[in-house]
Length: 303
Image 1 (cartoon, rainbow, N blue to C red):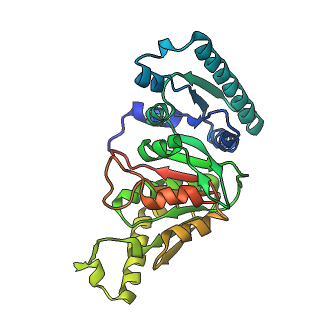
Image 2 (cartoon, rainbow, N blue to C red):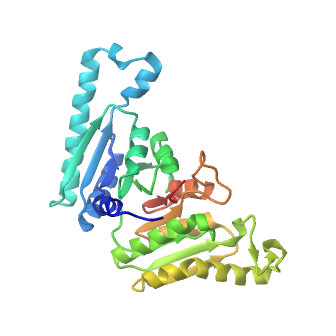
């Protein structure tokens, strides 16, 4: 894709966006987003949406709501943004912060904003063990957002550790691979690339159908395909040390295990054969619920 100077300037100045709803769930996400924005010398854009548009869909107009109720919601929204700003500035004192109070539906607003954001960050609540409770806004934005969407759970977030990338071996996953290299380079850490080949449903190598290959040869082929997917980015980011792992099965469990010591886990937004209306693959959704570090879902351009 050809990029004109205006597009390049927009990408260079795009803010880190964090969506907040006033719950303590968001605090880890705010701190993570603030530190990321500060390191990259970007603005932090804190967004709180009141969801009046949802009321309009039911009642025809939110003007029928009692004025005192709508005013109270706006006042609470202002307090939510003020508290979120305080948390952000505690995490990164010199950070430039802008806030937005909107009447729109939260998910619709964040999906729209993601088109012009450096990344969008959302909070998720931890449940039993490492299981996260993903609200409808998180799931919708993760599935339909543009670029990078980061889900941060409400437990402490480590600042150290490698970046982990789930490599699915398909061209669709290239955007996630590219982003993982950039993240590892920016942080100055190792990149761990994990691929489990048994989740493939099709593919050919040297004219031979994937499943026609003997089991022993499949692993050789998958290692070669994984190396091929990474090779160009290793040339672009020679400072990034890469560890490649190829497993016969269990991509979810291998990624979840790796997340225990990682600073960030990067996955693509869909698997093979995904449709525009259902962009988030089953592995990515499961990982958002079970990973023990922030998860970045990367959407390929043009989808």
